[in-house]
Amino acid sequence: MALISSANIACGVHAGDEMTMAATLELAAAHDVSIGAHPSLDDRANFGRREIPTSAAEPFELVSAQMATLARIAAARGLALQHVKPHGALYNMASRDRALADGVAAAVAAFDRPLVLFGLAGSELIAAGQRAGLRTASEVFADRGYRADGSLVPRSEAGAVITDPEAVSGRALRMVRDQQVVAVDGRVIHVTAETICVHGDTAGAALMARRIRETLDAAGIAVSARR
Image 1 (cartoon, one colour):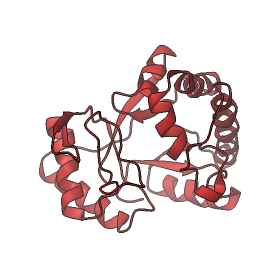
Image 2 (cartoon, rainbow, N blue to C red):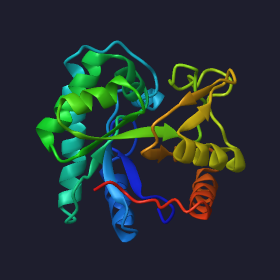
Image 3 (tube, rainbow, N blue to C red):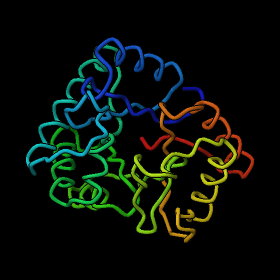
Image 4 (cartoon, one colour):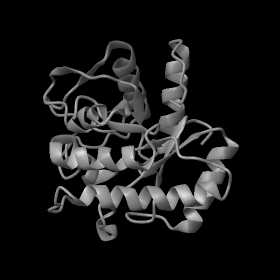
């Protein structure tokens, strides 16, 4: 928590429960870290990372219910949500599918319009947030491989997850400073970097986060939450 500016908190569907949500909220507050809901598909057995058929109406209900759960626990501690970032398969599907993206954005707008919607840079999710009149944050991934079209390499394929702290920090700096990342096929692609994701379950995540902060600090790039 001391290394990040925003925390995406699982809302008890793909992971976590009310006790872990409460503990995470309190830890984030102690470090002045912005708190956000991390809603997912209802698929706990696969950590919300398996793409499953989803109707256009489902994202609204899924996201609404999970935001409400985390917001209730936060409010009991005098805290408020500041952003929303879909998790795993829901995130990837909404990045491609306009109808699903609109459902996510509509849920956020209906729940609390000032919330910031995080989405993959250049994706349908960012476009949906903008159509809904939401503030958005275009997200890049320091620890994930990219395809040439700007999408993430599926976790089932080679090159999907990057665990070397030096490689990850170098990629983060290039994405922020130059708005570029090298795809798995070697092509250089453009990205809009407004928030950087490091997955908490990636091996060595804390060390990677530390190296990213050190690298950005050395380059004179300040890190702060969008509130």
